[in-house]
Image 1 (cartoon, rainbow, N blue to C red):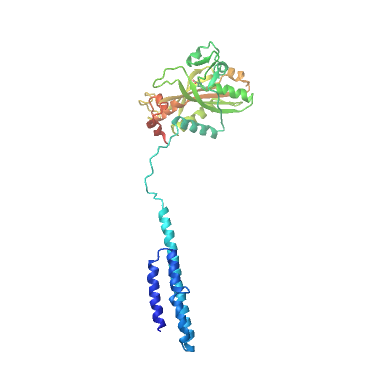
Image 2 (tube, rainbow, N blue to C red; image 1 turned 180 degrees about the vertical axis):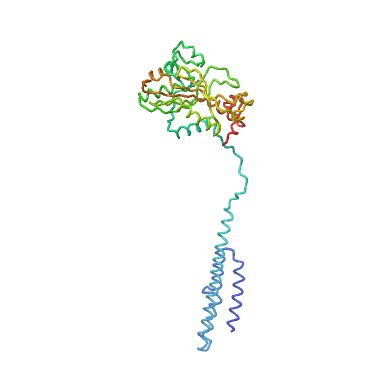
Length: 345
Ligand code: PHE
């Protein structure tokens, strides 16, 4: 027999069959057919006995070599099959990241909260603590201890919503000053800001709201002066309205501060030259402040001979309205998403 030829024919047939193998089971069958015990190649061994002795080794070697080659071909196909299967699996599991995501709406932090946080950050940087107080307040904390006895005419400045004769919705955040001084028990220094909601008996319109937000500030120490107050408020004005702003203090009146001031900032629109926004004055009023009245210090446990303090009250809505040109305070509370989303900073 021509062994070489027969092996070549077998090898060709093997290559052909391997091409059409689709899975590992098919491959096992092919393997059995070509190099298994009952394979044609193995049957060639039977012819060995008919050969002269000196040809026997070569004959055997040829068959064994062919078996080795066949095995390599089968193993190579096995590996290729494995790769194909992995690739198929990967392709099936691919996520198409170019697919459009469904549109879902993401919330925005409310502009008033954003402003409160900005101011809190500024004051935390200057060593202040944040304090909160109750919105349902006693007449004593809201008025009496702030130098506003029952028949004081200045009570009319803040039309109040009473719950009972001596309980009301706080009209300002100033009672938190009193609460904090009492809590500190005469110890220095007091350096706090108190953000929160306040309530007034007002008819709602473009510039009035029965509920709005304030940030109170209070410092009590034994070296506190009006220039400390001015420097601090200049920081607030610049943080809110830009680094080039200047402020001016005008005399004013609050029962709990003496002297009291209204604070104006140079108009950011015209840089102080005068325009429609600042009504040609070059300035815009932003807050009220003053040196803590001696009586208020004394009533909350601080000796005015030793301690002085300054306080200020920021209207948060007013800040936002001035900063963003918002013309109606009601926008803050009506939750129109078109309004709220503008402040997604
Ligand atoms: N409490 C005052 C108001 O609501 C603002 C203010 C606070 C003024 C602190 C001076 C000092 O009108």
